[in-house]
Length: 377
Image 1: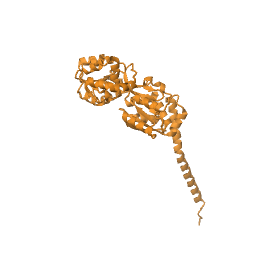
Image 2: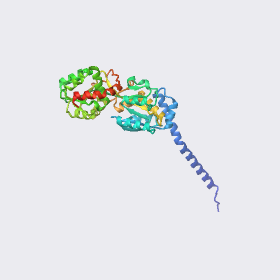
Image 3: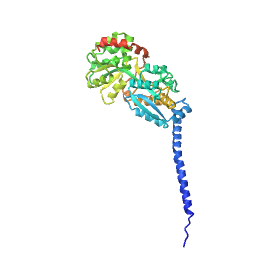
Image 4: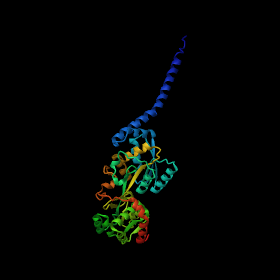
């Protein structure tokens, strides 16, 4: 009769216990290891794409792990911008709240004054409001290492920087244009030409009260050519719309053939990408409104916000913003791969008007009264 060797059982138990402990330790080490790998990836990409960014900022951003952006509603694939950023910097997750400029401004301001804002990054397209927040101390004073890539026209140094531009131009329905009208459109060079078009009873305009993109159109031309410019526009007997999107819808439907003072790259391009027969042009000097970002002075994740802003202003970031959002470049270093930008008829302006946004806002009440007296709206 053979005896059972009981010593094998304790040894087996000890072995299994050892495996369990090792597995537990490995599982505990995995998150830390993954986080370390993500931080290493972030630093590698930061060195490559954001010259001048410090390792301390990148490491601190990775430790914070997330950021909240209050963003304007853009035409393009904002998810593509966020996805690209998170791929480059996998240690950070970017959360986004989308709304119109007015809603974002009011919500951000109210939260900041109450001392409980979750916002890290704030986007807007009102330079007046952005600079007002800076003066009130609600935006962080920080200059990204990539700030020099953005032209002085499109930033309030140390506070907010453009990630793209909405240009104002003239736009037409190619299926409703007659040969003589097409010839005239081809000859338009400056804003002085615009009211002289052969489009009487066939023109659309947007009310001056619609927003900054409309106001800069009326303001510039009144300052440059006098109030007679508006009176010339009125001789076209235009249809006045409360906003650009309703106008574009009617233009596509063929209710009229031509419109002026329109953010063509945003509102017009949306319909063009769906197959609408539209073309547009930007007279000189270029009139544009910057879409910009700033960092909250009380950002819960200030380093993650700094990393996002510095990347957004970099060549890689600008390429991502332009080609995903549909906005025009705010940097000469960006590569414009938007589908319509490759068309022979598409040309960005060679020069830009330096707008005094505060003066535009100050004069708006009087200009609105003048507008109403001329256009009857």
